[in-house]
Amino acid sequence: MSGSAASRRAPPRALPRILAPFLRRPGLRALALASLALNLFLAAMLVATFRDPPPPPYRPMPDRFVEHMAADLSDADADRLRAAFEPLRPRFDALTREYRDAGERVRALLQADPVDYDSLRKATEAARAKRRQMGELTEETVLSLLPALSPAGRLRLVGGPGAAGAPGAPKK
Image 1 (cartoon, rainbow, N blue to C red):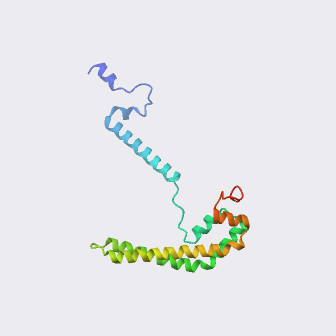
Image 2: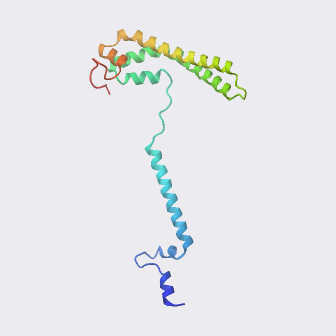
Image 3: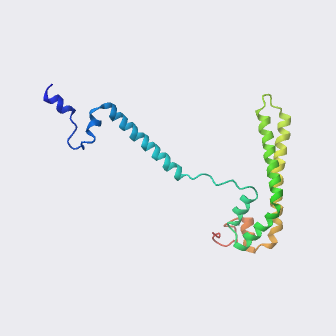
């Protein structure tokens, strides 16, 4: 064996002696690169997990609506809004359960092999009626609450933030 063949296999002098055995064998080099790629992938997955937090926990109706609307109201008006919806919680829970059951019936009818379109139409109308009942109950509650709110609270509740005549920035 000549001296030039041995010098070709020798690692460059700039690399530490620890890496020299890995660079002499191509199998170990590929393994080290694969390990590095896997570690980079896992690090990217961890970053993605912490960057995009999970969705907020499920809040039943009317909690979603009330908290969304209360964010733009003063503390006193927000308390009045919450107090108006609190006694209706059992009714909203029942309507939500019935709406969910109606949706399950629609899904079951859609999954049937021969689809019964008349039954599907009736089930869809029943689900729509439950959703409409929840909307009507919400509207009636808000309408009954309006006289108790401050003028600025009424404008924000009905017109939303930035409505004409509403105070500038919403309360945070």
